[in-house]
Structures are given as structure tokens and as C-alpha cells.
Image (cartoon, rainbow, N blue to C red; front, side, top):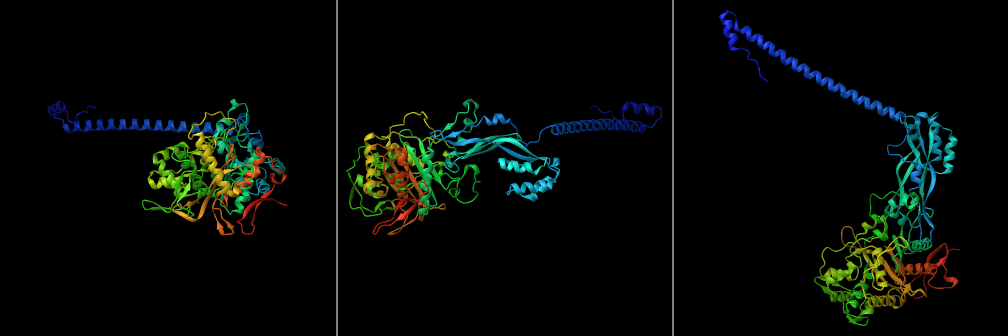
Length: 609
């Protein structure tokens, strides 16, 4: 901007010639300059006022349009409403392997309120509090007499409750149709199914979504209209599942255990026919997750899939089978069993003194830590790690549940000689019972890797040959001898040829170290040994039972008898052996300890009278 000088030289000279005062010229120019400045400031201020006024008009216009839209719309929660017909057709049933329904949809209603339309809000609040005892009468009165225009009362109500609300006769109480997910068998297979809840919902519809288990893992598939309502068929058998849960619950009670896990897996297909975790829950009324304490304290915790346990001596069959496969030993090879054994500054000992040597078979039968470590040393660290990795013990299982990734095994970051030694007898590497079931299934499958699945008749590629059939068969034979003359004699059930291995491992403390009086007792088995068809895993968390010799926590006295009772119950259902009426599965059964003179207690299944 070019500014006019206040005292232009030409005008000053002319003024002096005419005898005028030059200061008048300066005063006139200064006034003109101030007027221009004021004009510019006024125009700028006027522009700002116009812009601000336009913004206010636009904002108030938007508010007015939105208020008008809301005034002419149906009340709903601030989430997208969808058509009920679309929702109803988008979630398929879930069935067991025989087509029996495990999860389905049921037409029900929700109830909501328009407080501003109520004739007697206080009477309505009192009536609702009588019908639904979990509702607070005081809170309902406050909401109904306040400024709210819409509120949910109940997302799901029964026909009886709907009729009772009708009888209140309040026009401000309204109903909306919707479908809800129902689990007709209650807590049976609850950890597998997981549960469901509502996603997008409005007064006339609600979207059912999976929140855990296979419900969430297959949520998109269950809601896909392209499936034309076809059910999701799981591999589990409802009858076997119920039988296993009943026996585990009774065994938990007798063994004073904190929790229990059972897995029945079909070796040829990898299909899980039953998988239980106790304590459990009812997916129709799924509890809230615990915010404090250990995860395993919650009934929502799936011990079979999410549990990370050192599984003790059940691991001993792995180095033995691998060494046989490598040609390093055979079942009759004599192994140095002298104890204690020193590795660096650590001593490794045995529960009993087994003498100078043991045959390879007796290493498994008598469960010698020292001899197992000797075999692991023959194999070497690198080959040991490679074999365990091929068994799937380093990664989460591929089971079709959203909880599977949380079952990541706890694998040592370093693998010195002492780690190799402890891992060979099941300490220092923590995995889930489902990992153990898959590994034992691989041995029972002639050495071909088995990947567990919860889907029936699922086509999958053949597993990798990890062990030779000869080594796998020898391993099964050794496991059979553990039952006939070793630490699992209480697992002998006539006619079923159970082959298995016990494992008792101290529970680790969260702050480091191990508890002295808390263990995980596990029995891993395959049967029948002459033609392995099934794997059965039974694990008890913190069991304890009184025996003739005092208190015992070992798997041979806790997990093994429970596993034997599971086989007695499910064996006839599997059609493996024709047995007499006295051994048929009994309804409403429970465990009772029976002590014969000079013997340790045995657990027998007796019918409630």
C-alpha cells in the first residue's frame, strides 16, 4: 500500500508562497489517513459479523432439521437397526455329530418404555419390579418420571412375563420381536459352544453374534445367508460329552480337586468326540469374566485349550519313542538308572531307587527320570527340539475356537543341557491337555501327525510321518505295560486294553518356584492298545485323596481311577466291547472310595439309590 505523505513538498512550497500555514496541510492529510483506516476496519468488522451470522443460521438450521427427523422417527437405541427377517435367517443351528441340536434360535420379545406416553409411571414401575425382581423400583420411578423419552426394560422376556406386563395395562410399555440364542442342554459342552449376545439391535429386531468358543469362531459362517440355513455340525457326541462331564464332576468331588479336564479324541480323523473343562457355566446365562485372581478361577476358563501346564511324566514316552525311531535303543536296551544324576549344579533324582539299570520298557513302566534323561542325552538337544516341534508342542493348537491362540505353550527361550533333561520328563515346558492329546494321537496313529478338530467329516490333508510305524507300535506297547504292571494299574478296565502314562507335576507359583502341595495330575492314554482308535486325557487340578499310606496327590491315585471310570461309561457307547449289564453306564452316578484291608482306596462308580 502506498501511503500519502503528511507534508508533501510541492504543496508546502505553494502554501508558503501564498502565505498559508503549512501545518494545516499536515493536519488535513492526517485526518484523511485516519478516515481511510477507520473505513477499512469497519468493512472488516462487518464482514466478520456477516460470516458469524451465516454460521449461526447454518448450525441452527441443521439442529432444526435433525430435531424434525427425530420427531418423526421410531424410538431406538443409538445403534443401527436392521430388519428382523434378515437377522432371523442369518444364524444357523449348531448340532453334534449325530444331528442333535446344541444351539438354536428361539422367537422371543423385548420390552421397552416411552415414559412420556405413560398414564401411571409410578404404578408401571411397581408392576415391573414385581415381575422382574432384579429391577429396582426406585430407579424405574426415577427414570419414568424424569426427562427420558425412551429406555430399554428387558432385552429378552418369556411369554409368561410378556403376559404379566400386558396385564399392567400401561400404554407406555411396548414390546418388540426378536430372536435369541438358546442352548437346550444347559452347561453341557459350554466351553466348546462359548455363547452369544446381541450386536446391533432396535425395537423390532436384534442381531445375534458369537462372543466365545465356536459361536465366535464361526460367527460369519453361521450368519451367512448363502449357507441356506444348514447347521454347523460339530464332531462331539452329546451322549459322550454328558457322560464325561458327569464322571469328571464326581471325580473332582472325591479327589478334592479345584478343576478337571477331559478330552476324548478319535485318532483316525482327529475329531474331538468329547472335551470338558470343569467348573463350567450355562451359556444361556453366561457369567461375567473375573477381574481379579487367576484366570483358572473363572468358570469361563477352558482348561483343555487355554491351560498351560507342565504335564510331567506323560512326556517320557516322547524321547523313548524318538530314540527307538532313530535306532539308538530298543525296548530291551539297558539304560543307566543310577541316581542321583548331576547336570551342572543341578541334581536329578527318582521317586524310588530303581537300581543300576532299567530296560527301556521299564524306564516307562517305572517312570524313571534319570533313565529318561540318559535317553534324551543320546538324542541330543537339536533333534529333541525338532521332534517336539513336529509334535506341535511349540505352537497353539489349530482347534476351531477363538480361545486357541491363548493356549500358546510356554517354551524355554534357551535350551541348555539341564532344560533338555527336565523337558524329557515333562518339566520346563508347559502345554495344554489338548496338545498332549494330539501328541498321543500321533503315536497311536502309527506315527502320522494328528491335528485335532471340532468339525465333523472335515476333509484335511494327511499328517506328516513323524515316527516310523514300528517305533509308534513299540511305544504303545510300553504304554500298555504301564497299565498292566506299572504306575497306572488302576486304569485297567477289562476288555478295553488301555495303554497310558501317568504324570504328576508341581504347580508353578506366579512369583516363581513351585508349590509343595499343589500338583497337576494327568493320565494320557490310547485304547484299545492292539488297534488304537481313541485318545483319552484326564487331568485334575490340585487333587488330594486319603490312601492307606496317607494323603496322595499322584496321578496314579487321582487321575487314573477317574479315567478308568470315564472308559467304563463311554466304552459301551463307542461300541468297542460287549459287557455285562453290571457294567452298563448308570444315570445319576457318583464316586465312592472303597478300601479293602491292606489296599489303597479304589474308586468305584456306584448308582445313587
